[in-house]
Image (cartoon, rainbow over all chains, first blue to last red; front, side, top):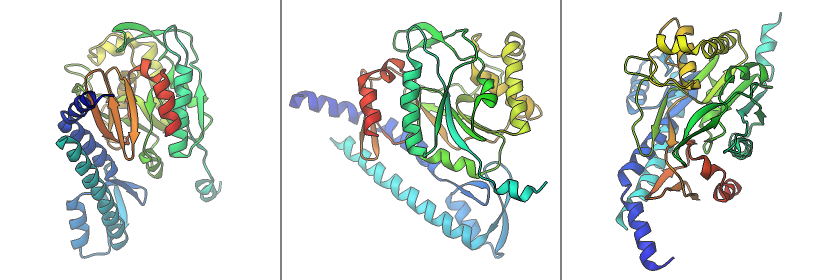
Length: 104
Length: 257
């Protein structure tokens, strides 16, 4: 491939940043789901904040399937925080890579 | 009966896909490749099933712009034909690239459908007709061999056999039989004529255009069509271009994964 062709190919790649960004976000929204005690939860900042501040250790949370699931507050919190951190880090890294491609 | 032991017994789990070759498409070869990838990613065994009928329906082929043969009938027979207690069913053109589907088996359900989908080049309608049910995608679904799951597939059979009636009843836009529609109707009826909220988590990515090449670069997948390139994460995707799925480029892609 000549330099010009390579450049054209890269510019074409760059024009789709908004689509790429949208598709990446959809994937991350799926990855934010986590199973716990037979329930499926989408881990959000709101859920983490709620569980962290709740004063009782044993709680029932509504999962994505609209079922109440019994959880141990601290165990759930630890797992959820770890999961959230991992997924959001990956989102940031992959998003930065998409931005670099856009700058070409 | 000692139910405690039953609960602890190891259940078999696997992936199945239906495949029947047509005049234009080698579905068996495509299914072998996509199932090989799925099996490697999810670490589950797979089985290719032959449709129980030789009747053909039609589908619009995005590569040629023509209607071509397609055997999408009798998907309800998967309940009887699957050798597994817990089955993940995928269309031959569904490519599994991440492990998310493994986690669905950690939650209780009888059957689980894919309710959301997004495409690279267009917005899908939300409903199956102007005054119809929300879309359901039969491209990927899961079931356990339970009484309720059997009822679901029995209903799909009834809907397929009386499609003209159900098509009118639910104001479906297209006249052509689609499992997406039959599944949505059966699910709605079985759920007491209410919309079911249980779903495979997330939205299914559909590559809805002609494809020239797909390459993997680390955690990224680069999809090239005739005009543009798209950089997407390693995620499960429904590839509509059968011409690409039969190409050498796809064979190389499968070898690399």
